[in-house]
Image (cartoon, rainbow over all chains, first blue to last red; front, side):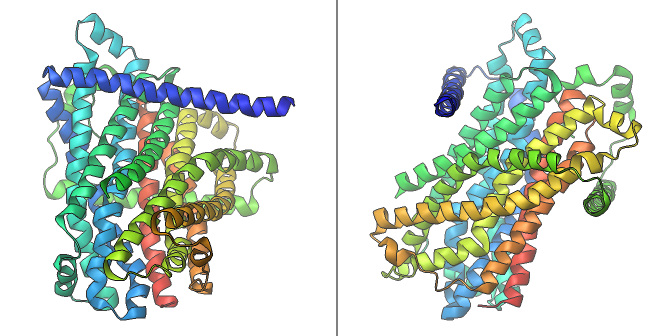
Length: 260
Length: 283
């Protein structure tokens, strides 16, 4: 019996920890919305964070998107060869890319780069008592630190996804040319021939906004909750990327079902 | 590296003044610096990889450490991977069903096609991206903390190579456990996909469970991906961890870099193995 008790105890503790984190994210979201509604946000910080998070992420977004497009074509290639449906390649690769893969992979890469980095920075500030120093100076940490990061992460992810959509289709078109001999013109024709609407693109962009909100809340929540020096920062970063990734997949499912 | 609000307290004043005086590199200089940096990191990664392989063959035998890492990397990732792969299975079948219904009303081959794609690519690649996040960040945070608290220097002082003591057990454990975890995650994703196909498109599980499209080529490509990802993730993350510098901020940076670089490694390896697989086993 003691072993089963241990298992239920562990499950209960895990459940409490998850609810605590989700609740904390909810409270944080409420505070951020209150600052945004009253426009009590540091504008200069928003621009600085947009540069650091957005502009500096462009190289990894480019690499990820080009490779993703190529992979989608390679995976569609045996099907296309089997049925000889070269005209449908653009539609086949484009459907999966625009609706699912581009928003998802961009979110995972930005999660690794921006989300983890955000936690590390906030965690370092907590450990070195800089957040307390802000409070002493009567500067609201939420409107000076957290709300600008929230805006910057959501904007970064939305813009990166639009960029990644375009680049992934570009990569897919040229790997289709290299691998299957499908001319890029035929590829783009398959994309725009009516099987794929603007709704599919917008669905992917709605997903990216949802992912951005989760990622921003999780990374700020874990960053502000750091305890215990340098190892504590490492553990918090690890916990953030895991929690954001799980949140991204769960919400991806919810949004996919809600949009159709 | 981007400067942070935290940085003015960490960078000593003399150094930050020097940085302001130094001319900013522009144009071709940035490109050249990036290229040199890339070549240097590539060489270091190669060196870590080769030394890890050397110690796998000639190093100390310590099954205890490997078992402990197998528990850390394998057992502790099972829950996370099960949740993620369960959801991804539902999403993929749902999207594929919608996509197929727009051209052909017949969904009997949905299961067979999905299983082929899962074995050849998606189970390994999405599972490995998740492992890159969880395992990669864990390895870099752990080794990075050891570097910052000078435990790695202590190992070197006692004439013990950190690659032998720290990287080798993680490498062996990761190669073994990534393969096991990816086989498990393929099973989970297929199971949740089967349930979605039944509830959303009325495809009977008996029809969905169709292995006629899976051949030896698909299995070979899938297993090759498992081993390649399992080897790449610990090497890339351990390199990030070992090159940590500068306190708790440094550990954060190392962890970030480990996640980004091992995810990029997975995506690139995926493309190369997929392209090679398509050329070797066409159709």
